[in-house]
Image (tube, rainbow, N blue to C red; front, side, top):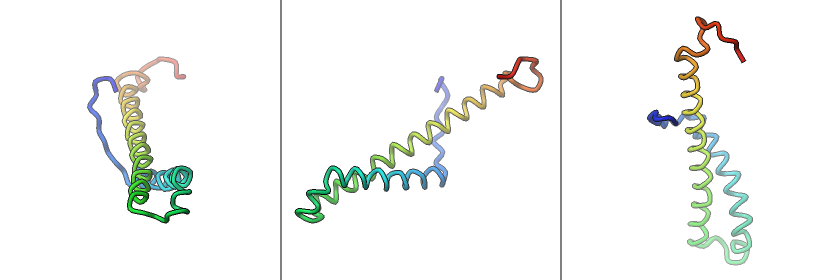
Length: 94
């Protein structure tokens, strides 16, 4: 982001994809890391806290990645529309 201000616009689609990602990734991570403890002791308060954190982290990573990608795409579209590659230009198109 070359000096442009970030526009963190969260769309419903982004949030939905992030939720699905966090449910899948978080479940796999929790099962791998804490599945044995749950089988032995049940779901204690401490393990429940680990479960919540294990779900929140992939959600945040996925959502932040989506917003950064959206911002990069917008910035790229803006730079193309700033006289480069416009219909008035006789420049060769890639």
